[in-house]
Amino acid sequence: MAFLVLLITIGCYKFLGWRVDRRFDGWFFQLADSLGSTFQKHPQVATLLTLLLPVLLAGLLLNLLENSLFGFIGVALQVLLLFYSMGRDNLLQCAEGYLKRWRAGDTQAAYHFAAEHLKTQEDIDVNDLVSLQREVRTGLLYQWFEQVFLVLFWYLLAGPLVALFIRFICLYDQWLKASDGAAAMPLQILHALEWLPARCVGLTFTLAGNFVLCFRSWIDTVLSWHTPTEKVLYNTGMAALGARVETSEDMTRPVERIADVSDEYTQEIQAIQDLLVRSLIVWVVIVALIVIF
Image (cartoon, rainbow, N blue to C red; front, side, top):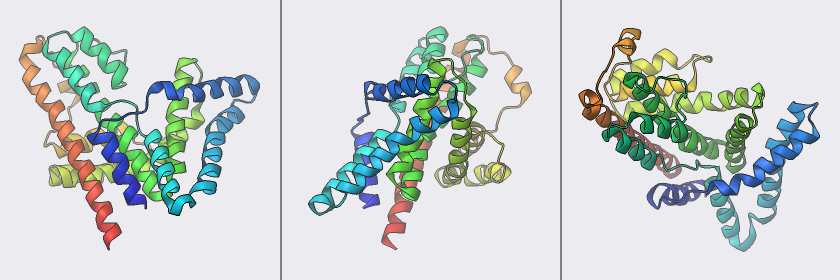
């Protein structure tokens, strides 16, 4: 059943382009506000309740209805839960939106678009084209991982409730940033949940790209607990494309005109998109082989 749910969800998400509207997340932010006010003196209690209460209610509903109508209700509920757990942005469209502004030479618009949709750093110099391009590559790789691969990995390994829990952690992080709150616990949990899937995605990149270069990069980070997920994905992703990771000297090398690097940087973003699509196909094929055998 898990493979059927996976195919339906990926089909709706990737090929039909369906996404959960951000308005459907309003109830979660209201819950976070309410519990945050109620347990103002005990923020960790508020955090745990905010993250776990919706998961427990979803689990209760799934347990009660999963065998109804010969299991069809259970499949439908799992599809809904997994689909809700996926990311909200169409990252291929976001990349195209960024490239449209980039090709037009409007680095200011490209910078703000990337900060909003690809979660790039907001404190880099808008005229530093090298740093901007690196941030966009990093953001695109990580957002794909967080919105798609991370959720699918834990769904296949532990079921829809864990996938839902991961989405709530990401939403809670958004709520914290919007409310100027600070809580280390959700980010520590997220890092723990990301550690194994990030290494699996890095290994997938070896099959979808340059095997030798990517495998060397993967070996360097496979057992490192403290290496950030973004760095693991960036190093292995760029190695899979046959590109070396920039040195500090490369990052300080000035690029004065966007026309000098426009084609090169556009091709890099498109190559990353192709790598991610190939990697998703590799995952589906591997899961299918596991199911068959």
